[in-house]
Image 1 (cartoon, rainbow, N blue to C red):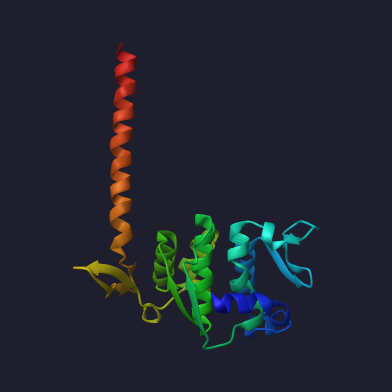
Image 2: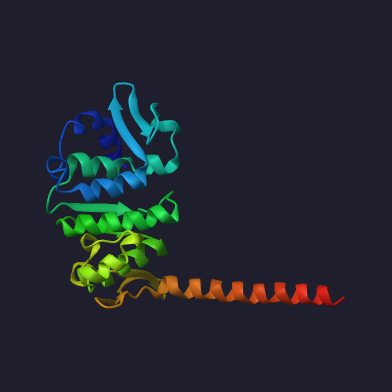
Length: 225
């Protein structure tokens, strides 16, 4: 919390700096493109405070009245534009916070790009979307350029391929009253085995199927009367 306050206090000064990505913006164009898609606008640090200008709008307004997602992405945006350097350690608690599932997927891809450029990323997450997309990027690394071209419409390119050896995943569990971390299996061909998400999703799908069957059975009974 103290670091966050210091960051906001110094943000105007920070905005004068250039990260390794901004210094070579053409080389890292893909990073700024995906960041722009996630944020949907741009920030500006002024004497009056931090302003946000939505894409396509001529007006900027104080970030205090912006959406929760715009506020939560502020620090990541400034890190990528003004702070990031090779071999950094970037720690993000719940990067999915306040984000639409589509943007959670894009955040996962953005993190992959950062990792591939030498930044060590640590996250805690409850997002199945993020974990599954990281898993997709691991599996993507098995494909040839020709194969990747076939799924280009889904937004993939070779830059999103991720080596499994660059990833470690742990599941926090409480066993007999003791909090523990259990390593999760990761394979280059199959991605991340995070069963903590699979079980409730499978159960929810099963429940949906049962409810749908009852709905259809009720409709048929009504039609027969």
